[in-house]
Length: 298
Image (tube, rainbow, N blue to C red; front, side):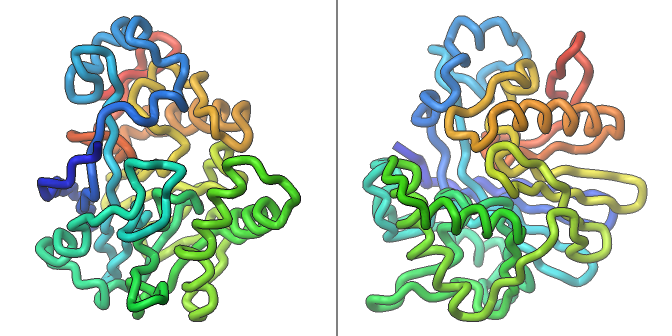
């Protein structure tokens, strides 16, 4: 079961930009089925992982968190986790949960009404949940004064998928998520559909990282000669640094996701960028070193 008994706050400074992790929950296992090659035996051979990222029994550790960026006078929240009271019966650990997320957000000094931008790296259920909250029998925007940014290509492909005749599990999930976490903010007129490489504000821009979804984006932060990359889901777990070829079974284009990881890992290593993993448990961020033809986390 997810653990939301702690605040899970972490902070990083990149030049003049500040990033704060707001953790919704942490858990062990659960997503292992999506990384079938990450067996205990395979993980044991990645000696640098240690107990921060894998249990002594070889079970992967994960985190669900949002990342708040303070830059150029703007407050930006990246990926809004699972959310409360959402019908997620297809993922029992997230079904109709009651997380302390908003309480933790406010304790960290961030009131929902103070945000300028909500950024969705992609439109999966664990990245859009707090886009909305239940008020009576309606789903209303949680961040009423913010512009919600979604990559135009991501949204268009998502609409095509949920509008198809397919009745497989992923399409059923996507339709539910659209109805309670995406459509209400679109209908409220709060969404801007943007290019996959757009600048959000000075020092913060999107970079295309397709593969997990068709229009997936990550967030590049650059300030005073320093750099950081917020991953989204082009990488789910640090073990993929050692095995970029390990794709998640739910990737839209697994071969593209491998190419994306290889390119972004190489770029982050070359530029000594801080890599902040959207599902990486504490310590959540680090820099990359070459380890033969692959990478390790420093």
